[in-house]
Length: 269
Image 1 (cartoon, rainbow, N blue to C red):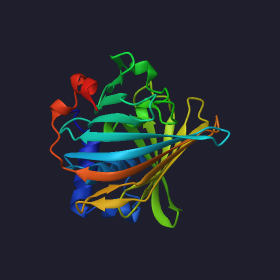
Image 2 (image 1 turned 45 degrees about the vertical axis):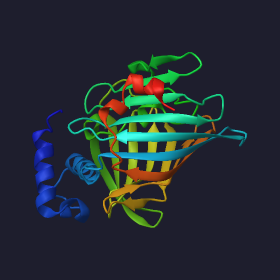
Image 3 (image 1 turned 90 degrees about the vertical axis):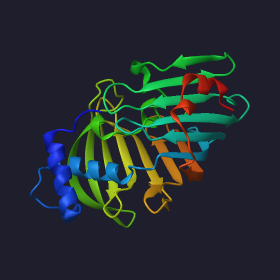
Image 4 (image 1 turned 90 degrees about the horizontal axis):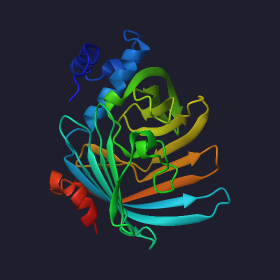
């Protein structure tokens, strides 16, 4: 695990002692960079301890002519102490993608490891670090969007407070540390009460608005973990969109590391 910088440690300590009051009150005691980092750390801490989670998902692809196609998936995620999460996504239908499975080992530092199992070829394809900005299974989500968004993957800057959909939000800018990212920056809206992400704007390498993600229908699980029912990504350059509808969240089902291997990927059913 990458050691958190002394700045982050001080910020985290301050948030712990003050119950996050500094960030919530919009204090001027922090620089915009310190406050942006503090918000990211607080949001990350609130999601610690989920252990594992499974869910079903309906992925709806819409082209620029408003024609739609649906895909049904199962998603499993394992929390890895000291590193990023592991996840596996298994396509159940339609027929042309049935049995396709995608495995991700997210990391706090360095490139994530990702593999795609193609049942028609009966082979596992590794996703290269140079292709992480590519489309995931024809959707408007990139491979890098599928990974867990670890704090260490970005630098941060608090921009302003702003109301979004009737909720008071922090607005922060995230700049990717990895030069191979397909984005120059992200602008993120998080509600102040629970630090849930409500909206993300993704900017391309020319700093033009590329995509917008909105997340809604949040529900609380185990009294701590918020999860959205809907994630909606719109691509402003090609007119396409992808909607993810999440169902049947189940936490702490007993998943183990052996459920997230390349061999497990081949056996996914």
